[in-house]
Length: 99
Image: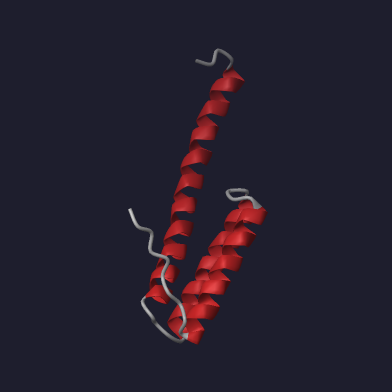
């Protein structure tokens, strides 16, 4: 346990930041998952495109806030872009992992 006043304050502020970051990261994961589900479901047109833009925006914003590393966010956006291209061509097949 911290003994100094500044260390106690740092613990409190870190807890607030951790909660905020976890919440934002959860919303990023939700945006990515909803896009993947739409692409996997074979949806066409604007809906998939809007979900892609939302997921891309969330990932980029998370990188700018320091929640994700910029290269990590860039890699994820590139992979989502590849999924979008395959979905638009109609050749997207979901990667099914066997347990």
